[in-house]
Image 1: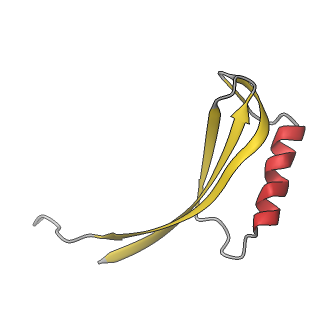
Image 2 (image 1 turned 90 degrees about the vertical axis):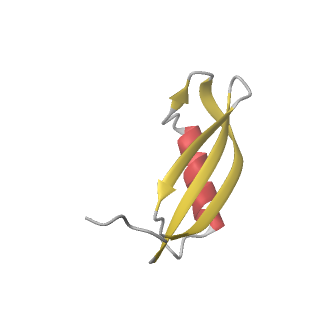
Length: 77
């Protein structure tokens, strides 16, 4: 049986120049790039998260990932 999943992956740059990634499972299907960018800017402006490399300072990347898993075998109970 096949199952589908969707993940929103937001990548920020921190003060140390390293990437910091946040992933959210099952985002709204009608979510727009503009809404995501606005949310990321709010995270940066309000200093909501920090990382071992310091505060988040810029947006680096946004990805919506769709995946399908086909379970081809289940062992007998």
